[in-house]
Length: 331
Image (cartoon, rainbow, N blue to C red; front, side, top):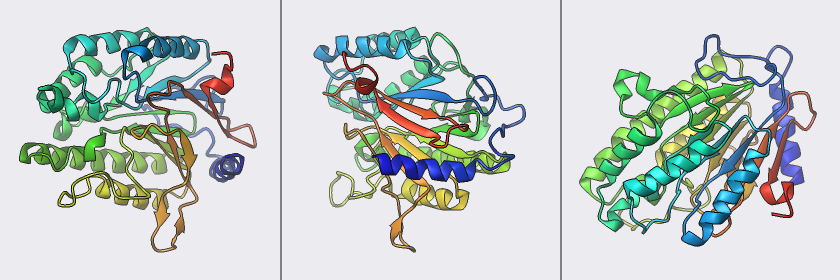
């Protein structure tokens, strides 16, 4: 872990050359800089929680711990319920209230358990996705008590329905949120869901490409991408043999953008409930891991914990990662 963080730090140090550390997008609606463009900032990552009634109090306590920290924002990478429980308006409202109660800006990326898998409890996945968009993405502000202005892909008439796809920047970093859920990205269950997958994948590809173009244009030093699904870099995703890989296109796009960007790219996701920080993206041409790419996976049920990611352009280490239990061992 230490060696990996050092490698990330060296990559960030190279990216933060003079004249780049404070780059910002002029007039960028998502820009929020604590202090000044080169100021240190930290953010929290949570996901795949809470799943069961026994985790509710742990989740509430974790949010209280997060509220005690000095953070730029919190991102929940989806799955705020388990895959078999009802996808009810009442549960959605409860989670929305919890997210809104956090004192920091709160960004929520939808997971498969909140819409894709709602057919398991008798609900219509597309109707549930529409309800998520209505409740959790009503305007251009983040959730949370303190708001962060976000850019939404829905501002583009071609992608008006994709309110959940967001973008914002802090200091030298650009953050991109995409609706890429588990359960094979909603591909391979019914023709209707396959059509939804195709439309959303086109929107995701456009938003990802636009984000990297923006980062290059404005000399930003790093791109962070938040999704729910594990895109299965190391092995094929769990799916029937006759069903196409719902993450293949995203992996190809991510590889191409990461190589072309040449600066740190950090993918944050949940889904497999396994906290890890590694470098699983492989360049097939070079037959080795892409050095400027890092994956951070959140904790997930039954482990209820959070990750603090800190970026400090003035520090030689630049990037530091700690878990909630490391920050507060008594919890």
